[in-house]
View (cartoon, rainbow, N blue to C red):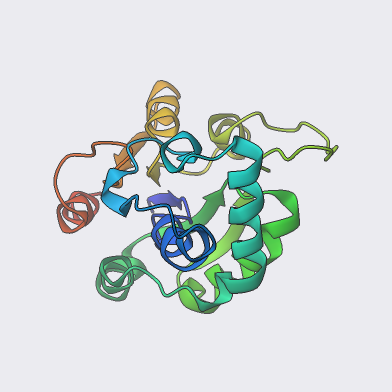
Amino acid sequence: MVTIAWDVDDVLNDLTGAWLRDEWRPAHPQCRTAYSELSRNPPHSIIGAALEEYLASLDRFRRSRYRELEPLPETLAWFERHGGRFRHMALTAAPLHCAPESAEWVIRHFGRWIRSFNFVPSPRHGESIPPYDANKRDFLRWFGNASVLVDDNVENIAAARSAGMRAVLMPRPWNSGPGSIGETFEQLETLQ
């Protein structure tokens, strides 16, 4: 059975859009940047912030409002129609101190299908953790059971492909992914 590794943020949910709308722009009314203008991720230079300021804001949102995020409707609909045909695992790059919120969210919304939550900690200043895996490719090589990666980060997609995996890019403003989210899920329906 094919095992799909799912990125969480901006694939299963719309973290960046919700953060921009509900956290950053209310605290920075001078920021008029639209979600569609986020041509890079992290988007700190686009919104006029230092990287540390952006990460602190995103982490505050994760700790206070992450639970309120709804799954992407297209993603949830795909799982309801096709989820039982595959095995699934979550593979995110959340910071260590925010991983519990992410894990709870995944299990609450997708636990019928996703039975494994994994993360490669996104580094934060002053945090010291053992360096098991430098990135998702390293984790997937060690794990050895995933066949496909679905992610919004083009570097993760390229790394998965270089490791011999199939990879599907979730279209987002920062990655110029081809097609729509719906078309992305059509690719997954053809997996054997």
